[in-house]
Length: 251
Ligand SMILES: *[C@@H]1O[C@H](CO)[C@@H](O)[C@H](O)[C@H]1NC(C)=O
Ligand SMILES: *[C@@H]1O[C@H](CO)[C@@H](O)[C@H](O)[C@H]1NC(C)=O
Ligand SMILES: *[C@@H]1O[C@H](CO)[C@@H](O)[C@H](O)[C@H]1NC(C)=O
Ligand SMILES: *[C@@H]1O[C@H](CO)[C@@H](O)[C@H](O)[C@H]1NC(C)=O
Ligand SMILES: *[C@@H]1O[C@H](CO)[C@@H](O)[C@H](O)[C@H]1NC(C)=O
Image 1 (cartoon, rainbow, N blue to C red):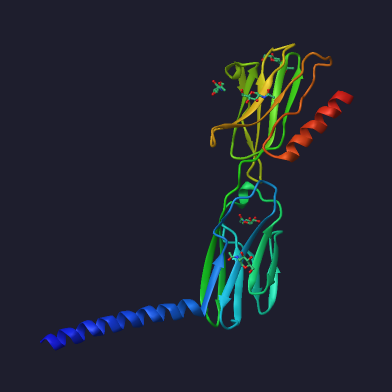
Image 2 (cartoon, rainbow, N blue to C red; image 1 turned 135 degrees about the vertical axis):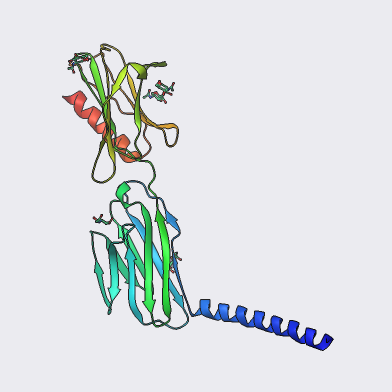
């Protein structure tokens, strides 16, 4: 009786070991690994890599990256690499790299890398999530009304107005926001009848709970239009605002 029990447990140990070693063998034949997640800034380029690791070089039947909407973006088939929808793809050293040139909100989501080969079928996933983004804020004043506008905003944000430390947002009128094809928003707000005062127009992001950027009007000068550069989340915007301000001053 005891011998049978011993035998049985030995058998279990043996089977467990076998199952384990088999697992190891299977994973060692070939693995497919892609970047887990990427979070680029708007308009920047993003590269997603998908790597094959194997002891023997596999015969590839299909190696592909597809978009969150299931559209194939790059496909390596019969030794021929084809790309679609304006992306760039490179296959080199068992690695398929997909590059999106100007990353926009519509590019967000789960990308799938797929491999069909003589060593098996594998897939890997990469999640793309954009950082907050916006272009520069512009203020346009006419007859005492000031309108502040921001383009390329993502996610949707709001405009708040200040005069010194006074919050004037409640006396402003927000225009309906416009969603562009690339997934970014254009937002605007008008503050009525505030002539001859320095106003601060700020971009408020409800999703991160902070001010992303702001700009100030200078009302001392006639004609009644003036924009001043200010801080922003990325350098390019600051330069643009400064250039815009310079252009206005020269005009
Ligand atoms: C793929 O391989 C390249 C080159 O060896 C490496 O730089 C990259 O980090 C790898 N990517 C992943 C997701 O493992
Ligand atoms: C699917 O996504 C690609 C890449 O983001 C895009 O170019 C294409 O227009 C989309 N197709 C559809 C049907 O939405
Ligand atoms: C300024 O706002 C007032 C009040 O809404 C409006 O009547 C006027 O037409 C506006 N002026 C301009 C130039 O938009
Ligand atoms: C300014 O007023 C708006 C609208 O009432 C409010 O949502 C916002 O939090 C205020 N901002 C500050 C810095 O007081
Ligand atoms: C405008 O007001 C916001 C909120 O009070 C502040 O964070 C920002 O520094 C101000 N910007 C300018 C240019 O004064």
